[in-house]
Image (tube, rainbow, N blue to C red; front, side):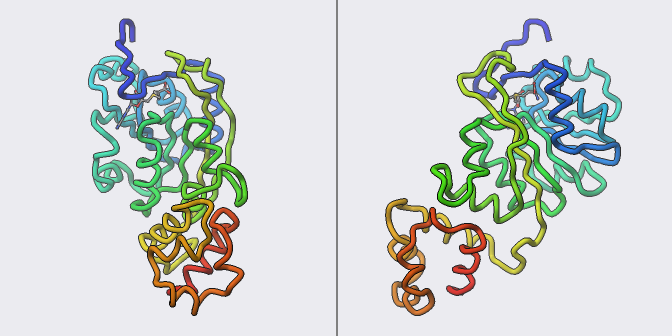
Length: 259
Ligand code: SAM
């Protein structure tokens, strides 16, 4: 790794602390039976810990310059793929695995949200995601209704599963040191949690509900439903609420009433 030219545009902030790396693997609940997907191998620090605990690891890295360093690690149960994990077709990513798999990653922050949703929306085989994200993003992910961080991200993640913060990670644990602190979030995916709901339509409703935070549902939802339908199907007290006062189950109920 000597002389590596760290690339900010790829979100290259690497970890080296073995205790922390092993703790992340434990947070993910990885065992010898597990197949694991890592996104952003970097110099292979997390990959090395994962490789010691998992059956198999497939690790994506966009920066070709790291190929020599990664191959030199000689990790026999690890397959490195050099390319953009966000652009890669899910089918192709999942083609590396026999069955279900866990995602574990110290994510490049610039792709956190699209990457989370790529897997939540498209994958039938992912069991969980244990990911290092910016602390503020972690707080938005796990926020309960009414909290200042509660919003579209919290609701949509709760739609697909259950999220919790496993640990906070100080910025000084990374090299180079980034200008934000981080946290490890684990999202356990619950397949068919809300079976039969069209996720695209539901997501459209949630986006509309939070479009203007200070406005009522009646106001915000009129972007996607006509006023008459809203008045016929929802009761007065619901229409007067603001999105931040409703949890995932309440949103699902509203969606079903409007169907
Ligand atoms: N896993 C390493 C560690 O913990 O030290 C590196 C983590 S670093 C925060 C993120 C890594 O993701 C970088 O090595 C970066 O080059 C890589 N990366 C960035 N965008 C990517 C993408 N779209 N697909 C695959 N890898 C990407």
